[in-house]
Image 1 (cartoon, rainbow, N blue to C red):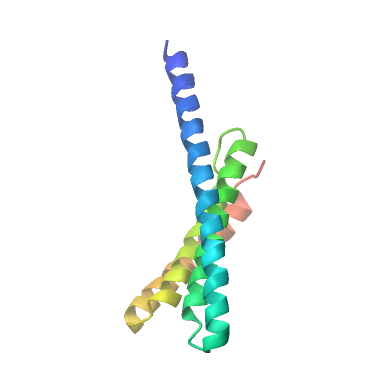
Image 2: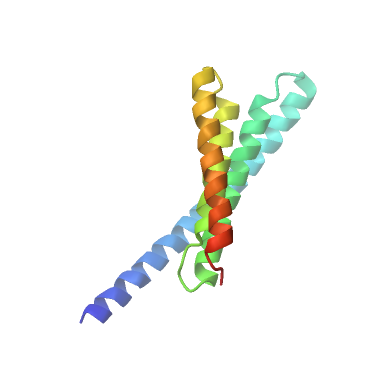
Length: 130
């Protein structure tokens, strides 16, 4: 009985992750269009390029989440840990680029990136990949 419940929940979770993947594809396309429009506007206006970099990193975040979902289905329904670390590093870099008002916040976020990179090195060294 518990095996049937477990399989049913796994199927429901896989369908939900597939739907999230489709939504991320739509968000990725929207982000790409916004990136192109922003880059086109900034190219002719010669304004600051923070918005372009913000849109570019957001695009890569969507791309990384899609890669994570793809790896989930390729690795027999398991999420690789190092992908979460990549996403965390990219998200904190985006946060530093977008909101860089207080130097103490930047220092804390930089230390967070260092901790994530050290964690990534430890995962790469000690955790076996499939």
